[in-house]
Image 1 (cartoon, helix red, strand yellow):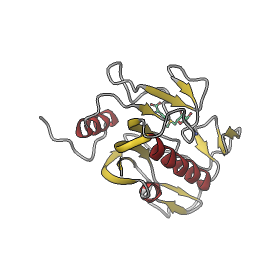
Image 2 (tube, helix red, strand yellow; image 1 turned 135 degrees about the vertical axis):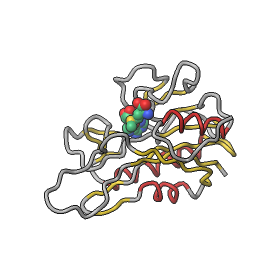
Image 3 (tube, rainbow, N blue to C red; image 1 turned 90 degrees about the vertical axis):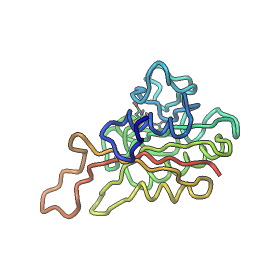
Length: 200
Ligand SMILES: C[S@@+](CC[C@H](N)C(=O)[O-])C[C@H]1O[C@@H](n2cnc3c(N)ncnc32)[C@H](O)[C@@H]1O
């Protein structure tokens, strides 16, 4: 059997590594299913949620902060939320959070923080002890400030979860960033993370 490594350019390899390490055949729930690019016919999550009602193959349209699942009823949950801030186009409502470009980004970093924190709380509610919560996230520079989202998420989850594993997905292509004139002040972020948490 090949060794599962913490870095890969292939997110499918990371996801299947996480599933092997955690003994998951199918996730119980994907909280932000989107177009389902993480999955194939064999490992399609049982509950496929998203807030966007235009998507197909969902089992329910709901926010990741308020799902129809009972307390301690699942053993695995995937969360791949939007990570962009500073998106200005066509602002529209997303529960209590103001979202833009139809759920693909946040206007301000504190809206991202609120969504991630509230979802961590909801994941803690629905996951049973030793249940696995996987979060894909990316750090971001906004308004000349470094927002270390992966470290923040570890802190936001700390009340209920311990970090079990951390995977790095380097970008194959240039990642989105604000277009600003002037000299570069921060390293261009070229990777995202898969954080693997275990419910206490
Ligand atoms: C990065 S995409 C997910 C991509 C997905 N993994 C895929 O394979 O297509 C983020 C998703 O989060 C959804 N989303 C945004 N806010 C949400 C919320 N509050 N609750 C549930 N889903 C939300 C968006 O509609 C979008 O489909």
